[in-house]
Image (cartoon, rainbow, N blue to C red):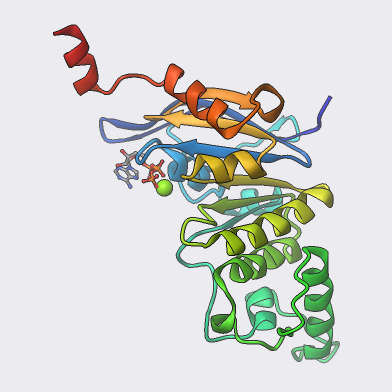
Length: 258
Ligand SMILES: Nc1ncnc2c1ncn2[C@@H]1O[C@H](COP(=O)(O)OP(=O)(O)OP(=O)(O)O)[C@@H](O)[C@H]1O
Ligand SMILES: [Mg+2]
């Protein structure tokens, strides 16, 4: 059986009287890419903020490698090996690749000074590990000169340096062309091949279908559907399945009843 990295049980999150999450069960296994999809407001971001320890659930349990963790917060999340690449505040674009990777985790030499040589060597190793094989860019290149897909690569390399076992990517391909999307997919596959896990959040079902091994579909704060690639023969299959299981909106329900 697959090794369970993290598990959420009956997680609820309310904002006042509104439930952003109404009891979510979800797990991520070691070495898998889990695709998380759902319409606007489905609760995807709330869920990953809870995994990152940035938002506290109203109720429910979080288990790391099978053991319940109490007092879940950002520090516990990091200890558990969870790193999130948030869409907006991912990188400092005026800084070099190497500065971005080690930001907040600089390597010091025995005199306490920044060990640039070691950082550059480590950056090269990390970039090789995720399959970032550009001949144009070196660790000294400025992130602002990189394409969108390559920037995601830098953020992923940083997560790996921070010893992530699970990297959460929040809509990493939304603003990207097909070529750039394929770069991100290449990085994701390299990360999976190293035994790490990825939680991939996306709007585009075709993208998510291509990259994920398993899918969780959210609908208004609940898991509407969980399925695996083995059970779905194509992205169209997954879309059809989602349509069949989708709950009607209140307007549609009213229309249906009329
Ligand atoms: N801080 C907050 N205060 C009040 N309501 C919130 C807050 N954060 C989220 N919500 C509500 O919770 C629900 C889920 O929001 P969430 O951002 O998790 O959805 P999402 O699936 O990430 O949507 P999107 O695809 O648009 O990013 C929404 O109805 C949202 O308005
Ligand atoms: Mg969101």
